[in-house]
Length: 183
Image 1 (cartoon, helix red, strand yellow):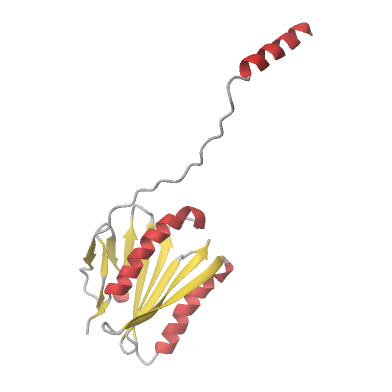
Image 2 (cartoon, rainbow, N blue to C red):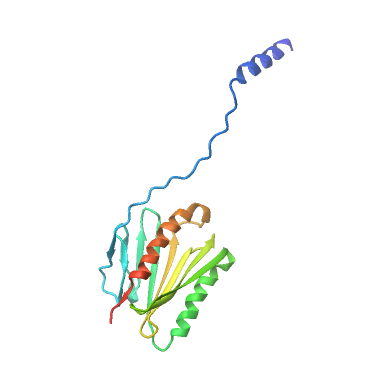
């Protein structure tokens, strides 16, 4: 018994050395490529600029998949010609955004209008653990309708992917601003 107390006393003296210093807060440091843009080179009824670091993959029906391999994400572009169905296309685009209300904490939409390029639409940011965090649609109201949705190839954890969402959202805004319709 005496040996036990002696060991406890020695361990408490040896084990309790120095001042306790709290660890500093750690912040995630992500490095994203510097942005340079180029116009897409595929033949579509529209064109816009994308970062030089992405891979543009052609899809049927004038659709595109813009892949961000380093971020494990893509922006899926769908195109539909307007054939006296603009109201249905707009309702469908809104429906696809608001399907995420189950998982979303909030949905913030901003209207977009560029009279010079005849481009009118809406950009929606879906806050929370939804499948798609950013979506937009743009139309000229007579011939063209384009929709874009951001997806990550992982289970959504909004806090973890937020820096990547912000990075790609800027590219999506650039797509909207540089969008031009081909007649």
